[in-house]
Length: 182
Image (cartoon, rainbow, N blue to C red; front, side, top):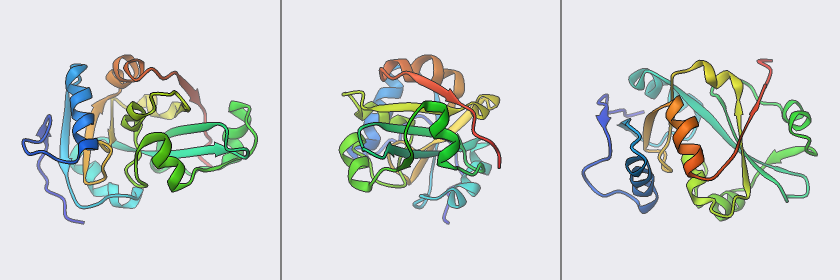
C-alpha cells in the first residue's frame, strides 16, 4: 500500500468528492480538530495497519448490520483486531439474528460505499434509521481513526470529541456493547 507518511492538520486544500468534503465541513463547523493522512484504498483492516502506525491511533472496524426482517439497522464500531460474532451482539441489543447489510442498503441508508463506512457516515442518516453501537473497549483509547466517507483518507479524531460533540450533532444516540475478545 502506498502511504504518504505525512499527517495534515485539517481539510485538504484541493477539492475532493462531495461526500468527503461534507465530512470536513461538518467537523470544521463543530470545531473538531483532526489530523488527516492520504493513502491508497484501504477497505480492509489489514490495509489499515500501516496507516495506524502513521496516525498513532487505532482505526475502528465499522460494520453495518441488520436484523432478519431488515427493519432495524446498526452501525457497530469496534476495535479492528477484535473478532465479531453476531450472537454475542444480538442478545445484548435484544434483536433477532443479525447479518451484514447489503451494499445497496449501505448506499440507500448512509450514501456510502463498502470499505468507506465510518461514524461520519451517520451524517447522511437524517431519518435516524441506523442505531449506533460502540464496543466499550474503544473507550480505552484517546483517539480513533476513521475514514471521511472515502477510503483513501483516514482521520485521527479525539474520542471525547466524538462522544460529546459529533454524535449529538448528528442526532444519534449511542449504545455501548461489550463484545468478547474470543
